[in-house]
Length: 416
RNA sequence: GCGGUUGUGGUGAAGUUGGUUAACACACUGGAUUGUGGCUCCAGCAUUCGUGGGUUCGAGUCCCAUCAAUCGCCCCA
Image (cartoon, rainbow, N blue to C red; front, side, top):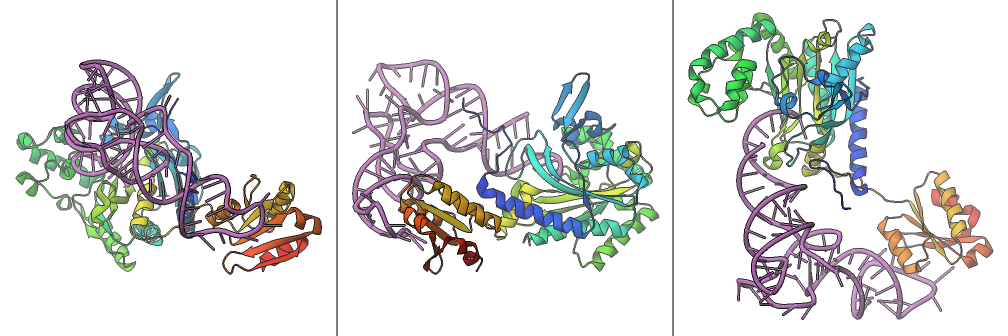
C-alpha cells in the first residue's frame, strides 16, 4: 500500500533537521536568558480545557480534533496556553514563587484548510508569565519574542499593539457596539450576525465588512476604556519605548481567542511574499484563565510563535542554517578490512569526531565520492597492506596532503 | 468550510488536433583507471504518466470521481 502524510501534515527529512535543531537551540537559549523554564503538557486534554463556556472563537468551534474515549471527550491541543494553565493549577504551582515563568515547544493541531504557512499539525513555541500583572512584564514578554525573531535574522517585522481594557471597560464597549450595529444588521455578513451576539469585538476584525461605511463611525474601543485600563496600557507603551522597540497601536486588533484582556499584540512580517503566514507571533494578557481552572485570581500573559513560519521567514530573510549530515572523518576500507575500519571509526568517535566508515564492497573511487558528499575534512584509508604493517593513510581534503602514519598515532594526528 | 490553479522517473521537466518504442538535463549506480575523489567518455536507470472509473479500434493527452499540492477567502501561529 502507498500511504502518504495526512493532509496538512509533513515529514521533516534529515536534510532539514539541522535547521530545526539550530532554531530550537536558539529559542531555548533565549527563553533561558529571560529565566523561563520549559514545561511539557500532554498533546491531548479533556475537551473542556479548550472549549470553555461562551467561547466564540473559530479555533474552538470548528477547528478542533476531538474524539471520544469511553465516556470522556478529548481534544488534540490546538494551542498551548490552556494546557499550561490547567497544569499550573493542577500542580498548585501558584504555591511557589510568582510570577511563574513557563515555556513550551511542541506540536499543535487544528483542522483548517492547509496553505503556505498553515498546517494541521504545526509547531509552536510559547511562553506564559503568570502572577505578575505589571506593564513591564507585558513589555518584557514582547521583547523576548522580538529577540527570537532577531536572532534568526528576521528583519522585516512590525509590532502591532492594542488593549482590550479590563472587564468593566470591555463590557461597556461591547454593549455600545451591539447598540450601534443592531440597526445595521443588513449591512453585515453572516459571520458578523453571530459575532454581534457572542463577541461583537470581532466584528471590527472582519475582513468582509471591512470596507462598509458603517465601520468608520463605529464606537472606538479606546473611548470606552476607564482610567485604570488607559493608564495600564500607557505604561506598557512606555516600557516598550524604554526598550526601544517600535510598535504601532492598532485599535482593530482583537485576536482570535476570547480569553484576552488588556494588552494584546501581534508581530507580523512585512515581507510582501509572506502571504498567509504574515503573523509570526501573537499573544496577550488573560485575567481569568487561572481562576477558570480552579486556581487563585491571578493574571497571566503569553504569546505563541509558529515555528514553521519562523523557520521559513528566517530563510527568506537570508539566514543560513548549518547543513545536515556532514562528517569530520570518512574511513575508506580496501579489501577485507571491515572490522579494522569499524575499530578505527569508533576510536575517532570516542575522541569526539563525527565519523562515517564505509563497509560496502565499493570501489575506491566511489568511496572517495561518498567522502566528498558528506564533506569530510579528513579521509582515512586502510587497506590490507597497511593492516599488516600497522600503518594508515590520512588525507586532508582541503590541502590534498596525504601522509602514512602508525595506526596508533591516528587520533593525535587528526586532533592536530 | 468556499473559490482558482496544478499533479509525467530521485529532481527539473518535453510530450504537437488522442495513434501505438514516454524526449532532454541533472542526480544516482557501474565501467574506462581491479589502491586515490570533485574533469572527461561509455553504459544502466519510468512495462508507465497521483489514484479509480468512463469514452474510444486506440488516452499521458478527452470526461467524471477521488486524493494531494499550491494560491486566495475565512481564521490563525
